[in-house]
Length: 508
Image (cartoon, rainbow, N blue to C red; front, side, top):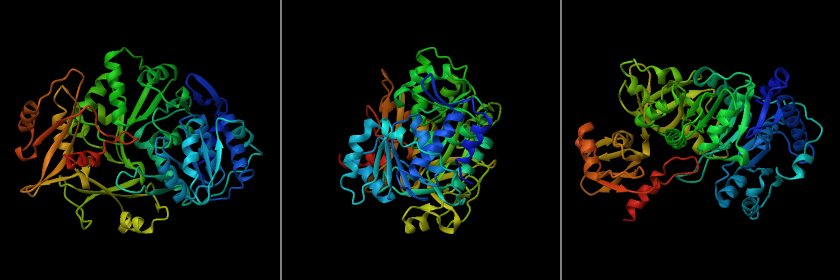
């Protein structure tokens, strides 16, 4: 089933409901959205001469045109390749070349970088500027909805590539449908007339969250200009009923900081879905205090988009449960469309409480990596997605993430999971952010180093943090060195780059 069918279902059932909005202004209802998608699909197949299965790249800031291009590609039976707009032109060039994209839809602010990227390609794709009349002219005679197989690729998602060349996870129509249905069961309820605010990049989590919202008849709200700050987000929440948004934990922290300083109207806020990095217990409690029971956590990867485990609103609110804090620090339970295991290096199941690699299997897992059979075989060996993440189940099926396997520290033969140390350090009121990594040690193998960002005006000292650790965790786990920094290095999705921190240590 073509994933674009859900848009046309909404256009038929709720034609007059707002579908796309820029700031406070509605730019298309569902009738118009559906018609424009079919017309743009016609232009892709006709004027651009694209054929079923061709790749169409999107290098654009957030905007109504993003949603239109994405659904038009699916409608036409093409493969959408959303690319992070913050990448370097060389990274654009690699992904465009590797994916074999035949067309690139680009916004004016990124045109120069994209022209630079395609200049050295042997087979340069066609560039279409979505801010220019040529984009409107491309809307031709409407194309019929393409017939696709469930396993045909719909979304080619390139990983962030922090440890090498990015890999293209092939997400099929079946994968996207499974994600969408699991969202309704495990993450959030959405109804006609609700809204989602696309503050995060639509090339990533916010974009894929369009799917359940479009299927349910909610309006896609994009801040004016495609981006904004916390004040912009709260302004849009006050304007649009039933508002949700997807945010990385760093973005949630920004919203909480703003709400603690300035009175905000959150009456319309339905849900903040957070994921993409660790949300520490102390920060989660601050967010619950600021917004009430409006948080849902998801854990997943590009290879199983947003869909491995979830911690629902009800679980966040269950303060009377004796394990509430432990559950709040977990990633929740397996989502409905996926099996999840914790295994040893030989893929044998580990008992409750023991830490191992997280494996997942289900319709929501990618079919493989584009043009990379070796990586596909290694990652999907035995029919299970090997995430590279470490975690442990409790007796009730709640999965607590420890760290990426490569980030685990082994000191004196003992495993130290950075997140456990980070959770303790964040108990200090003057600590805003922290990241823990290992540093080579001639006797112990590795020792623990903590990079700490103080809150404005904060004066947390190494001795205080050391005492805090000694009060809460084993002595051997405490950092042997504290580095106080102004900010932690992060990628374009807000994830801390521990590789960069390790490189900093290697250079000193």
